Length: 350
Image (tube, rainbow, N blue to C red; front, side, top):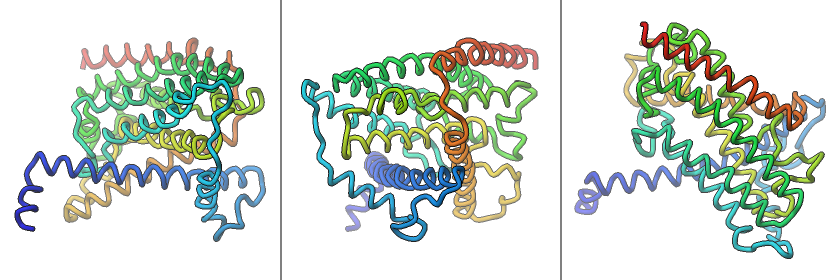
């Protein structure tokens, strides 16, 4: 046993085990979020619409997500006639894999990062780009006219909104001097006015940059009012029209996973990550207590942002498709370019 522990303690073996443990943890985290964010969304929708929401399965419907999961597992996965069976089954796997890989690069605390990647920000966007490919692949493979129309919308939407999002990210990288997500968080340590959101001396338009990133995140994750991938009132169920059972469920698990990823990035890039923003208030606490406090701070910011995503869905109606594209090309891209130029000028002068 001691020999085994000695081997395990060596750096190559420990790194392998550490990544394995984090992957198991990420899978559990994604599953729990997908299940209970649906419950939170249904309860929020019920509150907004002045009705009870799920109440029957467990206290206040807390066991409803588990019942829904069993129902989806029990349903048969059907491949429609004329569809490409291999690509049809591959699309849900591909979209879930891209979401899982994105979690690997996101630091949730001082010691809670599966791997420290110098280009972690680039890695997250590289993995996230597979998302739209998977939606397009599933829609094309299903040979359904509604799904194909939806996939064309999704591609147009993602191209339009990736540009202002990446311009905003370049602004943050210029301010931080790094694409390592852990370093970006570390440089926002101390009081809350050290967070990138409040770095007005480098970019007086930083709150506008945060708003741009947030709107683009909603569009990239296909959330209302930008849910063109579904468009139930126009395209039945959009890209998911021919999917049923757990293959349909995987698409929605990936949607909620991408919401968590987008809000995690917003927390890391703008809101100080695991920094509490209270200066040295907890500096005398033991290391383990400081780590737990930082983790709690991260998740408080994360779930506050996720709640706003849910709140927006049940408050604003879906936008018209051309209005969606005009918002990006005519407003968000010029605004993000201006903020980039202002930041470049101020960093050079200061």
